[in-house]
Length: 325
Image 1 (cartoon, rainbow, N blue to C red):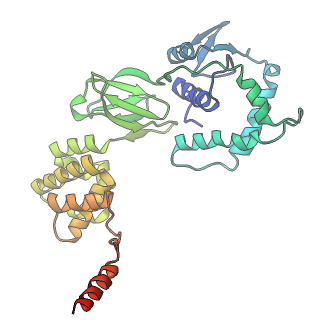
Image 2 (tube, rainbow, N blue to C red; image 1 turned 120 degrees about the horizontal axis):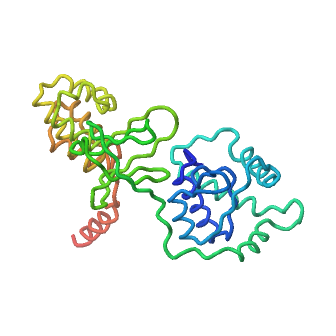
Image 3 (cartoon, rainbow, N blue to C red; image 1 turned 45 degrees about the vertical axis):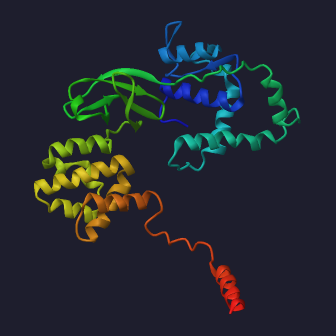
């Protein structure tokens, strides 16, 4: 399952299947795969990413003719079967990559059933088919499309005309190297190092995804933007009220502490630690750091470990002491 039919989604889906079955089918047949290529007249123009992907795995492709349903009737029945058995009712999940792996693993149950016509285990039939698979390359293909995109005045790049992703404030009106994948969008330096990774958005609605570290960098330079920032809305109530009441210099100190803790422990741990510090009277970096470390490590509410019982030593020492007397 993927958010769209882009070249990245198609190639990543095929890669997941290749690795799961342990080989590459020598021939793939496509119907209406926008991410694979487009038909112009009688010619098929493959997308650049798919063309490189196909060359890496050495498989051949064939495209169905338009308005020729008889060419793929069996496939359509299989699609209907999987839709009815895997996606009804509509599934809910938080991690799409893990969900996709679980979908693949569900075929193990199907492999233990008898083929409806041949009355042979489906798993055994597949093992025969596996002999015809091409060998996987030593290194998997990196399903990523790289583009230079110009950031707006807020240092954000826009994809598909409606999905915005933050980079760094200093990138405003500059070209930024972006790595576009099926599930994520990487913001890179000119040298190719990852600055931050966003979860990729799909759909018709407008989205605006910000990285906490880059947002905090902007706010520390312009604390007056705190009141209208998206980060403020995601801050716990008690901490937000406290920061709203602070004069500008104190607010900058709070933002600096939040930035340091976020970089080390993550945004959720940072804000939780600062909220606890507020409940204790004031926020300072030392106390908040200890709280954040406890939250991400041992846990604030985790009871202390009882440790080993020393009663056996008491018995030995007291007993020996009694004999000595």
